[in-house]
Amino acid sequence: MENATFLGYRRPNGAVGIRNHVAILAVMDNVNGVVRNLGQLIKGTVPIPVWYGRGQFGEDDVLFRRTQVGLATNPNIASVLVISLEKVSAGKVAAAIAEKGVPVEHLSVQDVGGTVETIAQAMRILQKMVRKASQQRRELVPLSELTLGVECGGTDTTSGIASNPALGYVADKIVAAGGKVFLTETSEWMGAEQVLAARAVSESVAADIWKSTGRIEADARARGVDIRGANPVPDNIRGGISTLEEKSLGAIIKGGTTPVCGVLPYATPAPTGGLYLMDTAAPAAESMTGIAAGGAQLIIFSTGQMNIMGCTVAPTIKVTANPRTAARLADNVDVDVSAMLAGETLQQAGGRLYGFAKEVCEGTLTSAEIFGDEDIAISRLQPTV
Amino acid sequence: MDKQAIVLHPEDNVATAIADLEKGDTVQIAGRATCIASELVPFGHKIALAPIAAGQAVIKYGENIGLAASDIGLGACVHVHNIDSQRGRGDRAGEGK
Image (cartoon, rainbow over all chains, first blue to last red):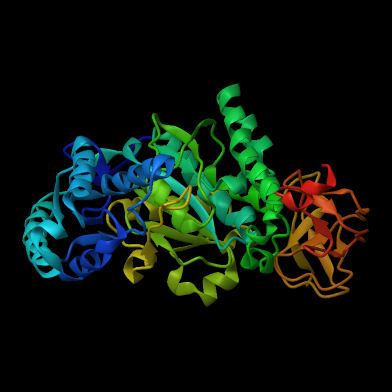
């Protein structure tokens, strides 16, 4: 992997971003309106509204805050304005962000004096933050600085045959360069555990893979339900996917062929270079939020029938191998690898996808970014009190 | 012109159609004998490359993707109507499995 470099934004804490956003982070849902309005008012910002964030406790609260702070400290974020209803929570979240070496300020609506005053003060803070961010220039950095999240959604049988292999080809190149890759969506390891476990770097990692899917099996048994009601979803079935096992065996191919270094909890950074599994829900919003909160700067999203969604924090590339989708939903497709069904080689198609991914790392916008088909959703573990 | 289907592993007993296969179409499968579709197999759906008896594994990617829910004939469409997933089946929790 000679010349494996790209032009990125080196942060004060050493991380490298592929975007240079100023984040406006809601600590809890009651300030989402202020956060969204500020996103409209100030160019160069990304609003990160959240649902819940108040009344959560125990493990659920820990997960929520870790994810929220992880999103705000993703390397694509230059600085953060934290907004909450009251100052205790605003201060706590801001302190957690500052601890990660990311410039941050915070405001509480109750203390500032309502919506209008908060927006006025926030606009002045954000003006300075955006100006400062705009003064930074990209510099040449090694590809080993990149963490890639591999995602699939709107899956059909073309995913496992072609677009996931093309994505896996890119994942292997990132790992070969010393970078990190996250493979998520735990229910989509079910039926493919044996393949992943055979590539685990240790017996304990292999056991963690089985433990993760075992939890879902136990949950299905405890609830007395067939998870086929939830996965595969109707568009998977329309696209020819018959069982969860079939979907999983195709899905894991997008992680490439390198050893599985570990199984990480949701929204947790990878400790070293290599391929890591991350224990997440399967739907794109929750999965990509865990990926971005774990520090991935880029997501490549393989799709058959097309899921249009991207992640607010990590640019999301859509790749499809379904020629009908590539034609009918062309606006949403960044890379079309459907020629693989007609004989284009993995090296050719994977190489094209890798080339576009490097371009996106250096600033080329994805369809989901341009259209604003982006959101986040933080997984919940238990009801709020 | 013969239509195409893709087989992913030497042990697979299904191939994936990459065109809409009509009943009677001759299907070219790389590395395998040709096969005749016994019914409509839409784009992206699976065609049986061998008879699969009820309860036998349907093999794709060289792995078990579920059990045949009924006898599946050569050239038939293999999908949710005749293949049964074995994972996440909490609905069977009361069956003593």
